Image (cartoon, rainbow, N blue to C red; front, top):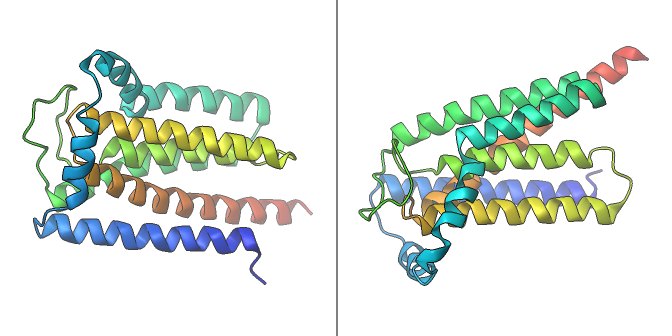
Length: 214
């Protein structure tokens, strides 16, 4: 029987698949989104004085930022937790997720917004790599952190803080004028699909290893 938590997981996954397909099809067809204009107008009210703050935050979704965070996590998993499977699954998930993001960008080929880019960019626009790879990285980290937590409150706090971090990283890409809002939304959708697939595979092999030790 599928428990309540799994039911919500499958529901969120189905929603992410629909959202990823919907945004990809519309972007490929070069159709416009009302949400791009509405959210872009809303974020335009953010004062320029905050740009250095968002430039700093956006680095957490960049290769360098994710690389540093990944190294810290791997040190914790390998040296303290001795979770070698988790370390391998995380590394492959983030590395392959980055390659999948590049492939999607090349296939869909959406150009960046025709605005002054306030951060360096050298690739196509959809889906946002910061959103997709960032979500893959930080949500997998959150999963590995709460894996052995007994407290439901602590687990919820980790998920809440992770969600807030991802939302701020996503917002930074719009505020810095390097992405359309739908690039970020599509990136989150693809990232959620990818990280859930990675977690399913991780749990599959974790269960097999546990059974083999019996």
